[in-house]
Image 1: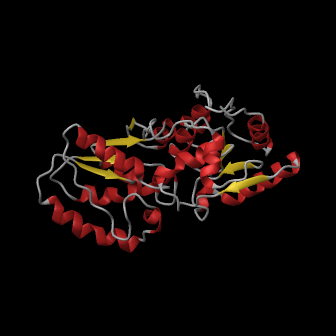
Image 2: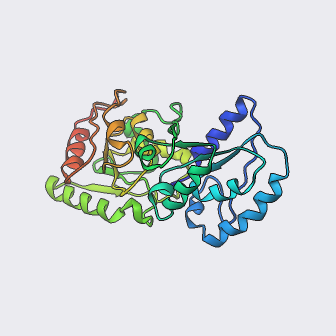
Image 3: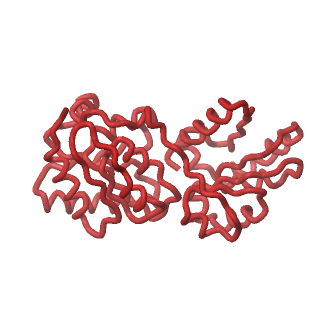
Length: 283
């Protein structure tokens, strides 16, 4: 789930309008980091006592973020339960559990129409938002200089942790290798690999020439929306709402024209984006 910055922003937004929020984290994870991806079934079992103890306190609603936390929220009977599904919890190995819990929740929130269609019950589509003050275009030359990138090379940004099977990093490598052959050019595949703080990602996106998403499944990839906010061209498999998102960005990039491409059937999309950005004129 990349990181949970969007969740932290959600909590801050609720608190800004006067809602008191208390967050319980599953053992073995830290909110806002990729450690959540490494939680084991034992970690989730250890979470039950914590939820039961906290349920004795008066709350108006229990909001379960991510499908594997839903059984814990539903185990208490004193508060209504809102379940938010992020994507991998619905389309992944434990999707059956998310669907089962969604039937019992009082309200369900999903990231896309695709997720809504996957559920056996009613849900509301509310995608995570993007901070347009943080993710905004800046001159590419400035961003590349800040990162120490070669300004003569083309830079393809793979934003996800490379070890996550559903992100299909090997496919990204094959696409970039093929693009190098077609262009006969220096194309660098940049991989933050989940080690870059979310606050630094706008610099990476503005320094890159194209964002490459080769995921096998997604809910509503926030990375795509963040890239488009920076007016970074996007090449993506047809997952979540990548197709619709990547064809509706009209914000001009600060250092020249851009093209947003989606659903690549071959390396041609990366090649096209690289050629487009090769002709950009800095401001």
